[in-house]
Length: 333
Image (cartoon, rainbow, N blue to C red; front, side, top):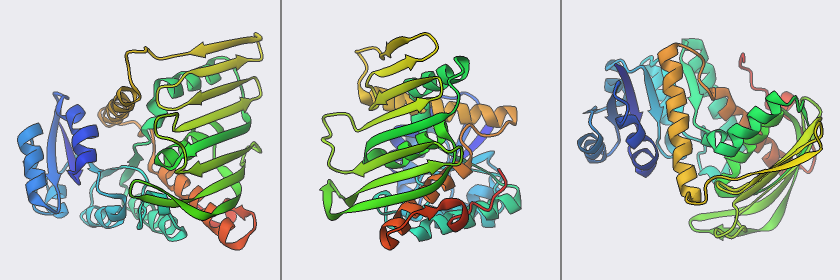
C-alpha cells in the first residue's frame, strides 16, 4: 500500500488530484491543511486521515507528499516537510512564487534553489507536475521526434497566455533542453485578466544546444481562442501545436509529408486538461512503485524559475542575461 500525503486541500487538490488518487486501489491518503475543516471534508469525500501539522503527516511515514498549496505558500510548506525528514516531495507549479505565478521575481528562484538544495542534502527526492508534458500532442510529438530522428531543436517560437506560461516554458525545456541566455522587453502598461494583472513580455533566448527562440507572454489572448501556440523547428522536421485540444501539425523533412493530428472532437480542452493530470499522477505513482526517477524531476521546476528570473533581470537592466552564470542551478542533475 502506498501512503500519499497531501499538503493543501483547496480546489486544485479536490479537482485535479484527489479523484485520481482516490481511485488507485493501493493508495492510502493523508491530509494537512491550515483550515482543518477543508482537510476533513476531503477525507470524508475521498477517504484517508487528517493530521494537525506537517510534522504529524511526515510521522505517518508517507511514501511521498504532494505540496498543493498556493504557490505563495510552497516555500514554507516545503521547509516544514524537510525539517521533519520526508523522503519524497511532489510540487504543483510554479515551484515557488511569493507574489503569485504571474509575478515571479528573482528571489523566487533563489528560494526554490534553497529548497531543492536542502532536499538533495537530505536525500529527499523532488518532483514536479508540469502536466502539459502529458497532453496527447506533447506525448505524440516527443515520440515522433525520437522515432523519426528529428534531432535537436534549431529554432522555436511561442505565443502564450500567462495562465499557461510556466507550462510552456517547461515545454521549451522538454523539447529543446536547458536555456543558456535570455533577453527580454516588457510592455509599459499591465493588462488585467480576472485577478491577474501583469505586463506583456517578449523573450528572446538561446539554448545550451545553440537553438534560438522567442516567447511572448500575455494576458491579452481571448479565453475563447487558443491559449498558446508553439512551433519547434528541428534538424529533421517541424512540429506546431496549439492549445489544450487544438490540432498538431508535423512536417517531416525525411519523407516530405505534412501530417495533422487531432484529438476526438467529443472532448473539450478541459477533458484534455483533466486527463493530463491523471496521466501525470499515474506516471509519478508508477515511478514510486518501481523505485525509478520521477517523470518530471524537481529541477525542472527550478529551471522554469531560472528562465523567469532571467527575464526579470533582463527587463530591469536592459541587457542579455546568462542563466548559467547569473542564476546557476547548483544542483547535480
